[in-house]
Length: 242
Image: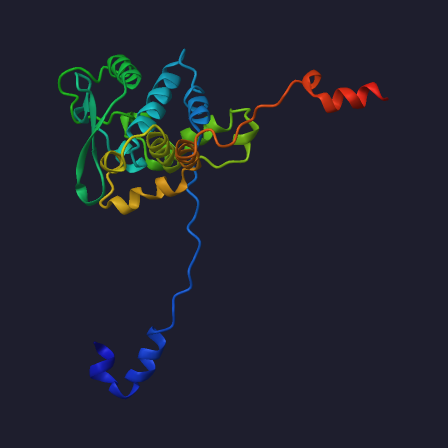
């Protein structure tokens, strides 16, 4: 240690400083969309246009895989497997690759998109899946801009003041998986977390999962049964004496 070798006379002061407890900070809330809000966002692109079909496929793939925006931007044709079992191969932090299953609807969108853009033909394996002008891969900023564009079209007042980013879609997918009962280790593998403790933020943040757990633990203790007004003797007597 530098202090021990360079200034040992001040070691006691250094020990006093390091003994000061670190101020605890509140954990930031995990911002995510409800399933209904995510469905609304993914339905915004106009699928009657070529660009709208691309954007619908991009949003579906981003949500379905829970990918980081950089992972989606780096996706090339060879990373997509449409045959059963359908999956996307994502390369994340530390150049680690993981295989994420694809939902049937996402597979249908991807198959149509690749065919329309002739990306399913031989020699296209290393072509970016999602690209813009001059066939250059979409940047992370470009993907974020697409999400903001469709977010701005949503009339839902609950979403009007919210900020929606690619990472919020990633959080949303994770929360929806957890609330559907998917075990945390599976969610960890889908998201590409190095440690399960990172994935546990969704367990701590899910009020829906907590509600279901409480209902399962204490069934039937609180009831909402109320008598019909015309079956309440006290009320009937009071009305009669008016």
